[in-house]
Length: 355
Length: 266
Ligand SMILES: Nc1ncnc2c1ncn2[C@@H]1O[C@H](COP(=O)(O)OP(=O)(O)O)[C@@H](O)[C@H]1O
Ligand SMILES: [Mg+2]
Image (cartoon, rainbow over all chains, first blue to last red; front, side, top):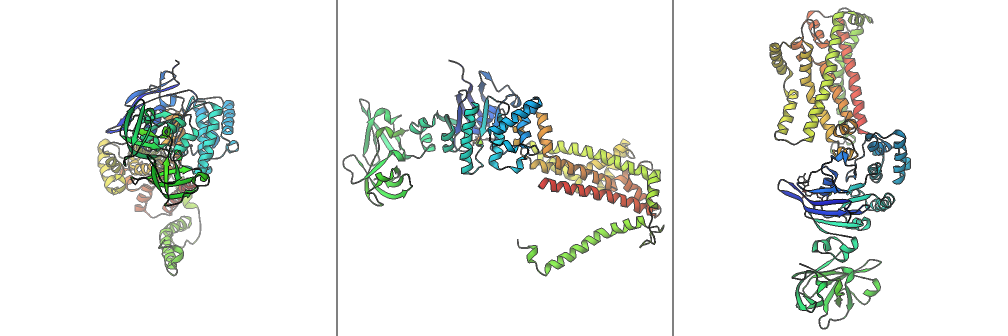
């Protein structure tokens, strides 16, 4: 096997007593859009800043094309970076900001001019060369920052929550542009965000961070369909968590017993780690139908219902008084109203049990 | 706001009146001196019976006055350069590092501002007498620098405060080495603060009289010292001319400083 493009090996960083990250390991392929997703304080920026060279790890190694990055000074790493705050140089025009890394590299004037034009075209800011950063909106400034970070064709682009200061509409617009820029340039991107929707929209793969560790790495679909921990299930998408006891039945079967004694049975592999814990089902994987429950069917009461245009949202109450969220197509919700009794169902493969 | 100017009604006229009185109080002596410097009365009669430029002519042809003017300018320029450079280094150190006793050091840097100048002057005089620095250019420069430096540190420190260090990270990841980052990004971003520090430092040295009296020798004195010592011997309108020049130059620099302040805000 060839060596991975970027290898993060057992990174650990402590500040006095605080462990910022611990045992962070990850391989990133060339051209990949990799996102670090996690709540604030989970160690995403710390990991990114170690790759950039602004922080030194307490332990661990970072290899680019098999060579250690840690021995290289940040200004020699030839990495591009876009920051959370606006970091355009206020005294330089947009054009000079983009030219900055090229001037530092003492490139010939003609090459600089051509490259600046090309980069400003790339971020659709062709006519803004002579503006000062102070005369541009936040979204435009971040686009210039992207142009500046890519002007010297770095093999790796780091982005630390670059869109978090922008409003939702602008954020989505630039997310769209980022995808296009990623496709056009083929640059490898390490992207940090705490916004799961943004991560799903942009990334080839996502590394979910929690308390300084990577919980799970995978494509958005893998993380959503097959979360390996309760944290990942809760962080990506909406989810219902039902308290259960798991009993093995032999011959590859198992069952999850709810607090009221009722149970669902299924393939043992569907019950993942299979012990006492939590059964997670996505709201859109659950169904309710009017009527009273018979046998092992779960009886619920509709507590609330909301029309959302493309779907219907229900809040239902279980026999053990837990409120669950159910989302269904509008026509499937016919015949239900607040207060009515219903039967709750889902396909067993959509139930995930976590310890 | 509670004390909105537009809502003060009758009271606002009282405010305006007080303002005018204070302004006259501050301005009249200066206007008075300026008028006398152009008056042709040897005895400083006011209002002047006629007008003349002869006092300026005397001032600018007398080698003693010219020398002191030159000394003042030389000291002020050297003090300005040193004050900005040292102020920048101190402000950078204070803004960018965390160490034990940082706030104590910060307070220490500012003591010359709160210490009575005359106390400082006596202490320096006694000290410089031992070192043989009184009556030398070095003595003047060090003395003025001690008074000017706190202003530089504060002014440059303030502009560093509004400078985001993330800009330096951005420049560094773009490929700039540590010195190049300072030169291409940090210094240009705080240049207005440095200009302001320079103007303040120059003015402080240019106007300084208490310390200078202690530092001066008969052969080396600054313009304010010469004005003061001449005043004690005889009352000639040349003093008025010298004072007017001093004030005029100060006003020009103050205007420059306020223009720069406007520049930072826009
Ligand atoms: N300079 C620092 N000193 C002390 N603790 C820090 C420092 N920087 C980060 N931390 C801690 O490290 C942890 C991870 O921080 P960070 O990587 O910034 O998280 P994220 O980017 O995911 O929000 C947090 O608990 C934070 O408090
Ligand atoms: Mg962060």
